[in-house]
Length: 125
Image 1: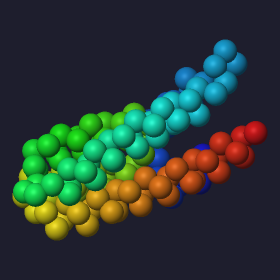
Image 2: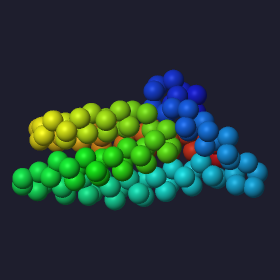
Image 3: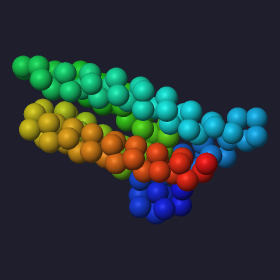
């Protein structure tokens, strides 16, 4: 996990999740991350659909991203959370191009973190 921390992908929240894991619940962190990816897939799909509407509902987009950012915070997804903040700023500025461009970054960071976490969990076995 240290290498994910050093690369800036995770923050202290992930360490707190690891601290909650014990012999009674040895897969706690992996289960939380699995729930995160299920929930985040639904939210990303909703955001993608909302970005296809015309005109854009910036308040709705901001609300979806607020929810997604909260999910990211729950597992300590630092880089994804940072992109979420940028997306919300573009929503507040009513900048459609910025929202679309930043959403691609959100999805990219989300996918990168997923790959890194999968590698992390495989290394634990």
